[in-house]
Image (tube, rainbow, N blue to C red):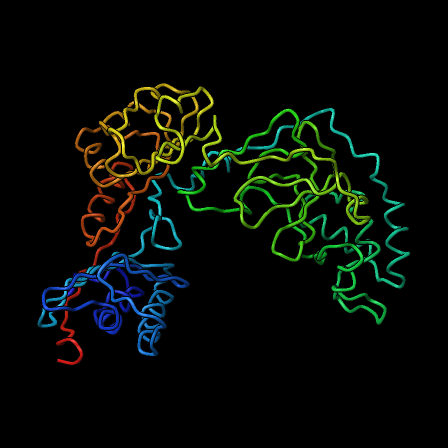
Length: 460
């Protein structure tokens, strides 16, 4: 028997028959009762405990996983968490923790509880500063750029004025002069409007980057660089007085027009840092959630291969560099006292072999917004209640239960996560998560408890 299905689309996902092949394939069934827990996503899967370890998956295992993934697609869910208790006879109690509007989508491990609808981490809300003295570089010369390109790409088909106007209307901005000139010479690469149109690879050889068609040019604002809360909350981009590029997640002034061939985006920067130039070219790494690297003072310099002097770009402080971010653990800072600073935004307490950590030194800091604490590292979890500026909190089940029982959960939180580290039964985690969600009146995690019989282990 199963608990009532919450919606018709979840029927397959909550069915024991959907999960039985996967449990047979994964569960490590010895002489006693077996326990297995894990997660399956549309593009990921993991077993946090109780799974047999083997090499390459068998055809039966692949088919079993795809059976669950098909149910995920039918339910409109990205991932699902499960745990199971399997008696020696094969009698099985399965727990399926279904999708919730208040749980972050994506891979199951580390998903945050979304306490405030639509909230994003502080760096994603930050807008660029306008520096009134910023000017284009002396090298920015649209006429010289056109001459240089035409000399190396004779017969190239340029974009028509109406195509450029259409792109500007879509983007709701005017293309910078140099960028418009580039497209007037090269146009939409690969559009095939004539036999003389240069191929994308030939254009790459001349200009040194992959040029996007006009229809693919976009603005790299913060929404274009999404990140899971557990990473986003720990970002702390900074801009120093001698930075050419502002430390930001994104900017309405970053106009992406190309790729370096490795997945990193090239953008014209109309919101430079205090030491930068309007219209400079920056690189947005696909391996970073924030920040950008200065490539050239102008588009003219970029295509000519002229690189800037060693002026710094915006950085994101995440690895204990301080003062915005502090990592207290055996490999970094050796105490909260060393982390306490008026500029501190993110405090991460990791594996710790000293006495439990006292949070008193960071109480009252004006900018502290993120706290992550490895289970068992805090002397008194109730001290978290005094950190009234927190918007994200991640800690262990025992610490969360202490906060809930003491009615000390900071009510300014926008998102939260429970660090489990190998918890072999997800039912207590679901109870705890739902208690946290209830404080904000958010939808609970749906739990379904189908039962069935897997039969005896293979070979018996």
